Amino acid sequence: MMDKPIGIFDSGIGGLTVCKAIHDILPSESIIYFGDTARFPYGTRSRETIIRYSKEIAAYLYSRKVKMIVIACNTSSAAALDTLRSEFSIPVIGVIDAGARAACNRLKGNSIGVIGTRATVSSGSYVRAIHSIRPGIKVHQQHATLFVSLTEEGMTDNEIARLASREYIQGLYDEGVRTLILGCTHFPMLKMAISSVYPDMELIDTGIEIALEVKDILREKNLENKTSGDYKGKIELYASDITDTLQRLKDMFFGRNGTTIEKLIING
Ligand code: DGL
Image 1 (cartoon, rainbow, N blue to C red):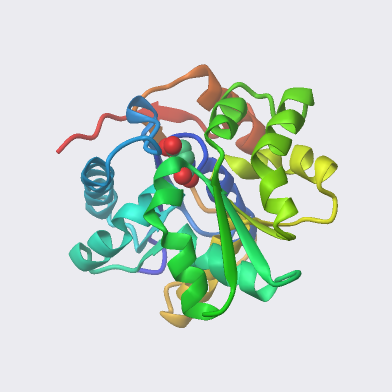
Image 2 (cartoon, rainbow, N blue to C red; image 1 turned 45 degrees about the vertical axis):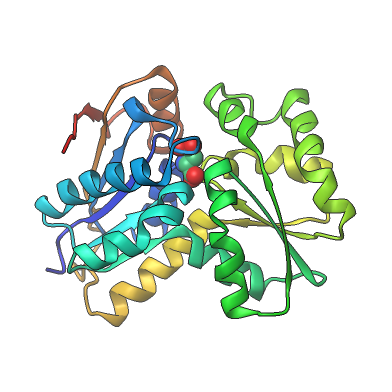
């Protein structure tokens, strides 16, 4: 069980930020990643569709004998976490609880801001997760749909990214928000642009937070890969469509040589 891989999935490329964080923190763990690039984006789809897609991917990962499933997509975590937990006998974790917990721990001021896709924001999942930890806290939410396209286009630290940051975040800032959850796995790539406009804003990168949670759960359940020495886990990357953006990000996170991405179509 210990040397089995961790299964990670996202609607597309954003989850690679989570995959990278988990690999950095747990280098001896093997990973199977699936990005549903052909059916991307999930953020504008109905809850029912997001649950169906998420179940199909989780069933694939389960068939590959993963020891746990990480939903590296806020939109899917918001819609499908409970369903996947009830249908699979291995640990299933989503980015939302980890992000909410980190925001409460690193709280500046007395309110928390959340930016995400429309589906994540309208699900209210972050508000519920934060209130279950700190009932009294004020949560301000804002969708930041354009951030997804900016990231896809590689416009992560230019004037357009800074303008979009002002457009989406200024309202939250004016409300007193100084702790902001990047509630979409694409958004950590915009950290530089957001911080240059709002240097006093504490940004919560859910990828790093969930990687720390994965580490804790593996230790708690005695599932850590204990292979000694400099053993590096194997990384298998799959996507339902191989796009230029995906390739570029893969190169950025995992280098040009070695790790490759294979096309894989999953359907019910
Ligand atoms: N990666 C998704 C998330 O974290 C956003 C992209 C999408 O709309 O599918 O919410």
